[in-house]
Length: 186
Image 1 (cartoon, rainbow, N blue to C red):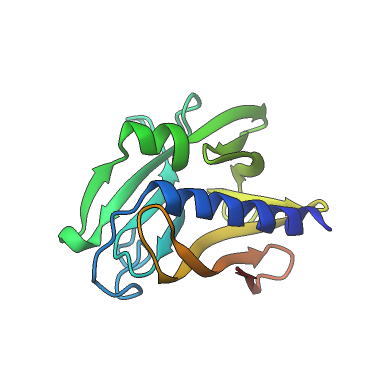
Image 2: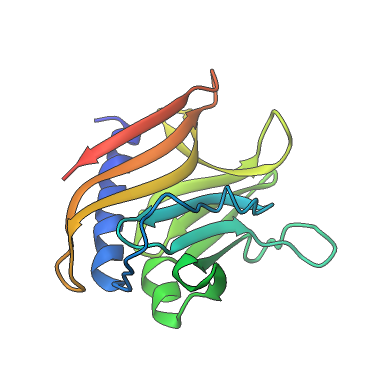
């Protein structure tokens, strides 16, 4: 199994943990609103699921002078679309166990980022060679894939026992610019 395949498998575990711990569901259909449509300037990637209208967003954490905060380069928050798109900070439990991140500076303007729900899955925050902007990458045998979006399809769910049908990872092959959809059937 390739590193990307292992990353997909571990992402599945992350998502299941996320669904188990966090269960604030609403009836608003998913897909009508996305962080991309809201034009969040420093958006790195986001996580959505149905039937939850809310979205967890991962964005650059910038200092007041516009430079990257080297101590905490990624900030995570909710967009509560079910509450008129209100932005909300993570709770301490969400930050510590589920959606939060840890970062380690690697040098050369690059950081290794780990999601709190599964610290073994490395994500890489670094500047893009094409536009010099920070982006999040997953590596598979040395090949970088730009992570854009994670979508979780639920058939039915409850707080403790979500029924995940599949997980979609949307990424971009940086070698040719083609969109990649990896579906993990559960």
